[in-house]
Image 1: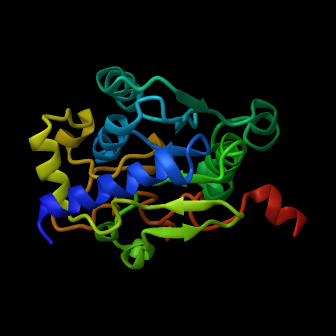
Image 2 (image 1 turned 90 degrees about the vertical axis):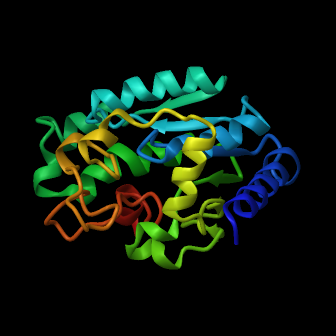
Length: 229
């Protein structure tokens, strides 16, 4: 399928979801990372008032926060929602801010999974920017999934290639994340992200050496839910 056909089909899917199927009941979750501008640009062209949820973990690169603000302004996003971890829970579980060293899964639970659970409470569906070419568990990604709860999760860029992403950036003159020039192909929290090396998979720089490949918002219940299981 050509890039033009991929873009057209993705736009049609998003229009149906945002304007019809889940009108008023859907949000887009974005990390404002290395490739995020594509999905945000597509969504803003359909409805700039679509709720966009951004997880501010308290450990993000300052470049990501600046990029978020600049890109949101450029695209005219009018409902950017910042989700943050509960300071009380952090005070108990991670008072020194070093939980990522000894238990990165729980750190992600506290700083990402649980805040997102709360932010998604008003919605029946949400949009993710994951793609198959990112590898790992994402290689078999479906365009539509049921999440770990009852919500529907949509991955409209699932079948996009890196070439499709690059072409879209160029066609719409979208600004790259500032860290792309330094070799960062997937950008998360400062302690758990490094630049990718030549020949590595796009997400190889995440949680390097830990065996961890996902933060948990896509494939596991929160720490609190597990504790009660």
